[in-house]
Image (cartoon, rainbow, N blue to C red; front, top):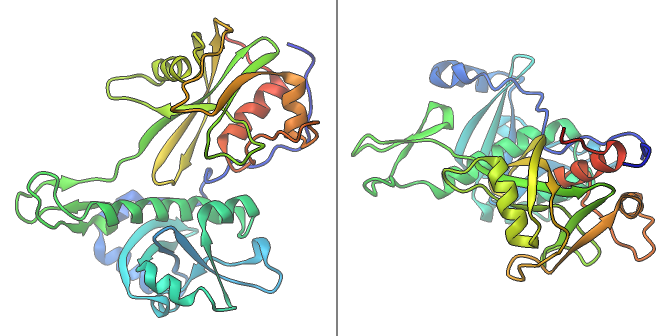
Length: 319
């Protein structure tokens, strides 16, 4: 590996490092949480389908405030679901789901910002500390909206434990939210790495390969399988980098490096539009937005950006 490169201050990983204490023990104490919701310092994030609602400020950007009082939230639309997210310095934080039609009805209000979470994160439309609890609220409300019936007997279920499970009144089955694990990896060989392009990407962007972990599979095996399936690259050792909650709809991205043992790229065209090897210097120019052909990497909100940057700046050892 060439000498270390320094690309400047490292950005924060999106949706991670939540300031909330999830206070899971309080979920079993409905009256206790109801008292938290009634306090003046309680705050709620309002979600309608894929849209997040925030109070718009004249200065915009991170000054927009996505936190509402319960009274303010209820004026936007009748709550379909209320989730206890946790505590911030003792104050209750909640996610409130409203009908997407109610969100559409307030989109034209000048005092409100209504947009999707990805745009909020990429454009820095609210303070970064709000992103993890909004992600938590969005993922949980998505789960409730799509799991209203018992998978065992088909009966309509009811939310319990302050929104953290659903119970069937007929067969008594308990249903809990699930997170889908996804591996996202950078296959490297010395001063070169493999990036791919999905047809969904903006035309200039290249990123890490990724895929869902299958039942009975370790994340290391999933890294090797997905890299070979998508790009034809055989990998050996795998090194964990970091993880990131990804609320689209409710995944956990497990970031890794993989030791490439072959060089021939064979692209799965059902998964990727393209894939190829990049040099470390070329990747650095992409991160700095100075690539001669205008090629780019994912924005800092995505773990792919951090995996790629980590390799460019510090390299990776599989020893």
